Image (cartoon, rainbow, N blue to C red; front, side, top):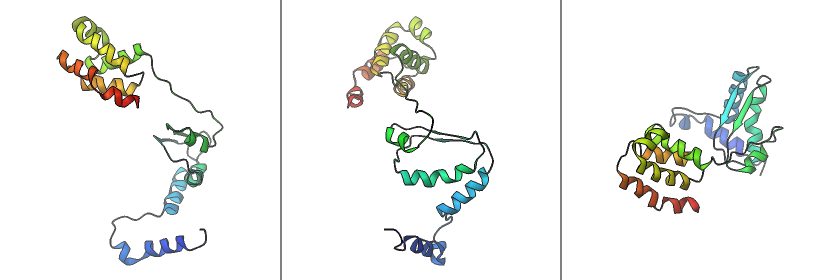
Length: 176
């Protein structure tokens, strides 16, 4: 409930000498926001907020205050898997929804991380290339999956290890 004294109590604790002795560093959000506002004043900036999940409108209003002092042309990029976060931003610009990559592109990315390039894998290790294409298809167009699994099998020549990945239960987890 507003006005009940939450801020006053927090200020009391924040300024108490016994509390100050317990911490090497203290920060009050308003002080940080004011300092950030001064640093950004009339400067063109780019800020990236990656993998954001908070949909609370009031929190976003508080967060954006210091950034309003920046120069025209400043940008904030927000990445999220949550459309609610994009909606609460109240931007004039459209959201960009990324799509999965094609199986072929997934294969090329996988091969790049597994052996440096697909041509090398195809020409020197056709058995691995065949299994690798199946693994790439199971990645369902997710670049991170292709990159991670390619890295996991980096320069691995043991066909059994590749088959183990192909037949493992990690694919069942990704479908849930």
